[in-house]
Image (cartoon, rainbow, N blue to C red; front, side):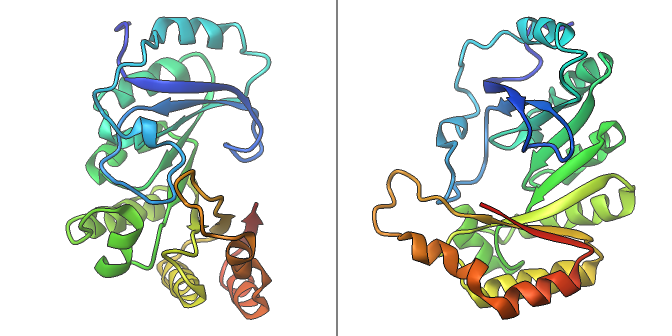
Length: 237
């Protein structure tokens, strides 16, 4: 066992919301190439930040929770950034835990390597799959990023691994028509599960009001369309 195969910013030791139908621990991995304006984990963006987290201690914790926890979710940041992800997953899976992954689809070649090890994936689709829209959502030039995201989605669709797509409805960068567009493109691609997540203003956002955030969930035409397009559709607030 390598002492620290991955850099970790923090851990949630007990969660009922991060892995569908499972009680899980969540590992928040360090590093993200994007700068999404709605990110609540900005401290995780720096790939080189050292939190002092000791991996073997977490493995010991998991060994003591085999009859309590069902799974472990690798979240972030963006987990696919780190090369040591596969080794860390293998160590956790060897303990008997189901493996979940939260990702924006940044690095499809890495996703392809670890897909056989995964039991579930949550893929964040942050905006309509067009460079101008996605650039606003990820805070960097999206021209080179979109092919990666589309490839990751294609890999998931072909893999047989259980997965969902979800969008955080930040009213500063998305409107109702954007969600219609996302839903249509995902449905046409073959996605079966889609969720809308309520935006909760980040600390530096002092102008967005709750009514702005709620408007997506009060639009009956939008919700009706999404329920027709997906086998599973729901709202997370």
